[in-house]
Image (cartoon, rainbow, N blue to C red; front, side, top):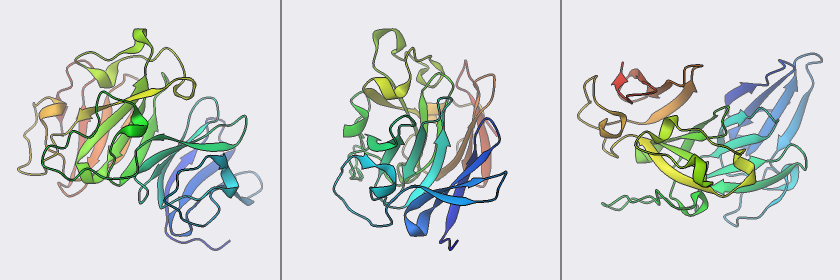
Length: 239
């Protein structure tokens, strides 16, 4: 197979398949670790600004980067150039947009749509996505210099002062999702010292994301040359 700028990879929980973004070809592919056979999972190979739902292999993608699968086999894709997060349902293989209006907010206010429907929120070159076991979706919002999160809109799952750590009662695919910011000020410099809370911490291009079994969040601060941790209860950031 011919690949063009392969990027983030994800291995399913059974260890049978490897998924990765073939960014330059605007596709997501999968490799069977048993047979070594590569297959197309998502993306027609074309690019469009029109937001349409459709069969995953026949629907355009615009610069996919981060890929992640949840416990039900659904796939989440950070569409960097399209400024959106895409979702592929495992039961139907239909791809839809679940976050991002497709335009970046570069204004001085940078409201970004926090507190509202995730599909109306602004994302600016989203990179990595990480789906937590409770269904909350973390996003490295690269050029907004923030870590964002989508959470379920049911009353029992509303986030409080620590939104990154709150549970979601239903899978993300079953309800409208609300967007919020869990880390980053929107400013890159100066570097913030350890001990600050996540929402008061400057991030200079967030890239990779990970959440451990204790719900601590780890991220790469690319241009700051750091890997940092957000403590689950206090949201204190450390390097």
